[in-house]
Amino acid sequence: MNKQFIKTIEKYNMLTKGDRVVVGVSGGADSMLLLNLLLEIKNDYDITVEVAHIEHGIRGKSSVDDAKFVENFCIKENVPFHLLTIDATAEAKIYGKSVEEYSRIKRYEFFNSLNCDKIATAHNFDDNIETVLFRLSRGTGLKGACGIPAVRDNIIRPLIEITSKDIRSFCDDNDIQYRIDETNLSNEYSRNYIRNVIVNDFEKLNDSFCDNLAAFIEDCKDDYDFIESASQSAYIKALEDNALDKNVLKTLHPAVSKRVINMYFEDNGVVLDRLHLNECMCLIDKSSRCEIKKDIFALSDKRHIRIAEFNNSNNNNRYDTKILKKFEFNPQNVDFYCDYDKINGSITVRNRLPGDYISPAGRGIGKTLKKLLNECGVDVEKRDSLLIICDEKGVIGVEGICCDERVKPDDSTENFLIMTVSLED
Image 1 (spheres, rainbow, N blue to C red):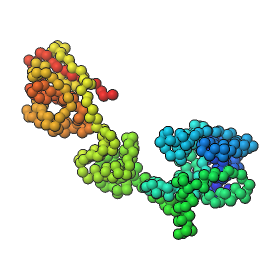
Image 2 (cartoon, rainbow, N blue to C red; image 1 turned 45 degrees about the vertical axis):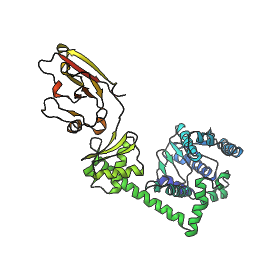
Image 3 (cartoon, rainbow, N blue to C red; image 1 turned 30 degrees about the vertical axis):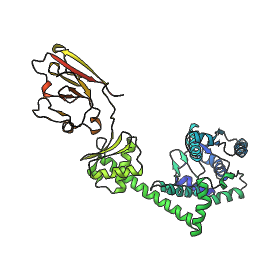
Image 4 (cartoon, rainbow, N blue to C red; image 1 turned 90 degrees about the vertical axis):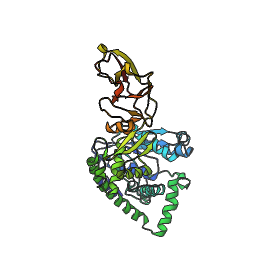
């Protein structure tokens, strides 16, 4: 047991000289073994060991007794002890989470609040098997099939290669005291059902099931690492002006292009589910768009796929207009200007409408706003928020782009209408 424990620590380079290690200890066999083994090697590795315990308020007196058991052990062994008490059932309901999920979140929040170098948890071989089966039952990809990582950030799991059966046998043989959580026998919890029923049924089919699944998990890790490495290189190659080059994406295997698209959206603060990822994959071969969530789209043109935010709210109150004499007028820092005396009737400011038409000053030809905005390279998601200036005969200008030929200033212009537009909040 000790040899396997140290072998795992060395294999994954879990400990560094001088580390302050906080151990998550529930009082069960797994965590009590982890604590005892770390205390045995703390001088060899020059580390300090502390204990964190969460009393979840689920099992009444038994839960309180678990906390006292761990605290008494720490007092006896002169180990710093940290306790957090919560009402997991009531609090999980408030936040709309399962008790298991909420408890996990609170555990790691508590661990990280202790400002340690490493957090040691007692996840073991069986936990890894159960986790993968749980993820497969709910739907997962290659990453989920990799199971529980031995090391993630500052979290280490030195028991991850040791079975639950071996842990309990070692504790019993070496007089390591531990508490038994009676809820582990209840199949109402998903993981208990997997542990007590599903795994047993698979072992009836093949008594080497757990070893075979463990080998599968290792293969998944290797494959995932390889594909991730290839995807990182492809992402660097495909990224261009915060968009993805479709010509690069077309050369990639789908397993890589999917990851490249995922990386791009994650870097822009958007997480894609399987449905939206597949919709984005379809954009590689066409110019179109798909909605990811409210106002957020994946947009594909002839060359790129990019993230776009469409804001179709009315922006008509974010501008200011003035009428200036010729000697007062300065075209700098102005978003629109025209000859005020050439305006026909009253002015309105609105967002664009289908069929809007303009004759841009100095071009000698009329065109739809859609065509004008295409020619000017205005991003699709920004077009509906542009301000369109109209008089009683039609469109006389577009914010930041042009005015119509019929209101164009010339040498005879005496009065200028100017517009400045404030940035959106």
